[in-house]
Length: 165
Image (cartoon, rainbow, N blue to C red; front, side):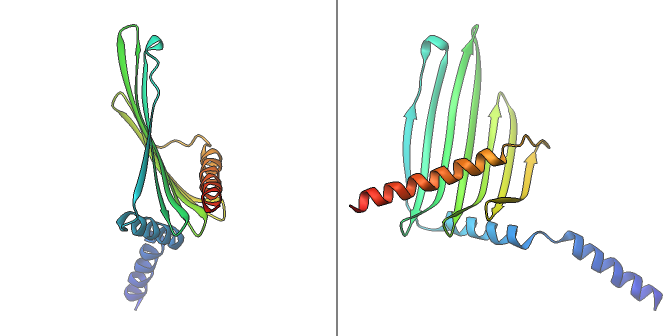
């Protein structure tokens, strides 16, 4: 009997601590649904080259709108700098996902000269409920990302109101 109780306790502990946050799972399912949908992706490109300073940069803004609601906004930056004849390459991407008119997830990466950082932030009612950063670091930028996400959403709503007239 003691062996049975020990095994039961061990399995319960493993399953309890091995579970992920159900809200995070729901958000990931929503993101997967967005990505697998047939919602058209709108892409805008902005080139910002400043040769006299050795800067070459291209921004790609991608968005997905479903039923007049912004569901995804990505800011992809591809750039390079040349300082004293040494060229340095940088790529970064920040993707904002929305559900029910609110920011639900921000994910992205930054890569410079072969070093890469990745992050994911999950939101519920404008609060961070879970995050991952690889390699491990946290710089407190989640408030800035929340504000950017809210700004994108507000801009999309303003644009929709302007185009309805």
